[in-house]
Length: 265
Image 1: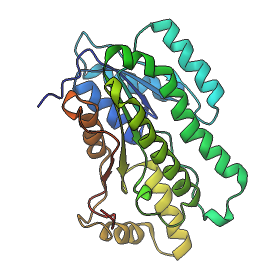
Image 2: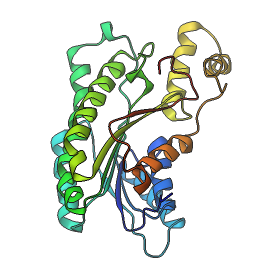
Image 3: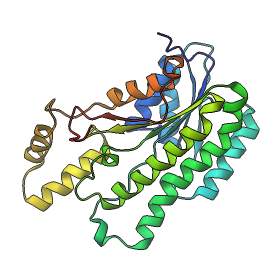
Image 4: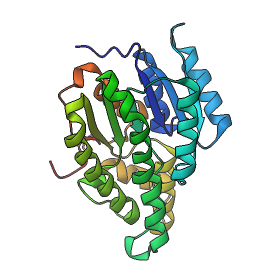
């Protein structure tokens, strides 16, 4: 099995923390040159330092300060980076942070538009920026980190459930269009994963049901057949494989990494 990414350039959004950072670390271990993007430059600098600590002398890592809530500014930042470095990206991992919690019926139009911009439009901006380089290299891996809500809507995540479905359909459409160029497009669907977002979900639920954090977390873990939450690196392992040469015939799929929690196949 060939999972070597030596000489490949990867772009990971949300790469300074959580699942995105775990993905950046795993791709680095496999030999890729990794560019990470997020809003906070200090966090990006620290993350790149950590990538360099586990790299060979031949790998080069950098970052882009980018706000995914503003697709126009994101487009400007990405194209500036491409002009400066003049290199193709072979791997794109879309991993913007999830929309705020709440019921769909309580959301206003602006909530849906903001989520649409942050997730679908910004994802599309990045694909448009990188796709020609992937075509010329005859190697492209586009991996969208979404949610198991694509298969089964999650309670109190109305806007998130809605936009994740839109991204999944967009992704499947691109998989059909880009496969002929050696570019695969797949989605990874994390379940409950030990991140800051999960902490916020547990805290919100704790207030709603008037139970302590530990009890709520335990109840949520018991909903998972493995009776635990995922670690970010476990999601990253799936992403790294889909980014590899050995995943060349896997295209257009939704891959849950949820410990078996999702009821549907």
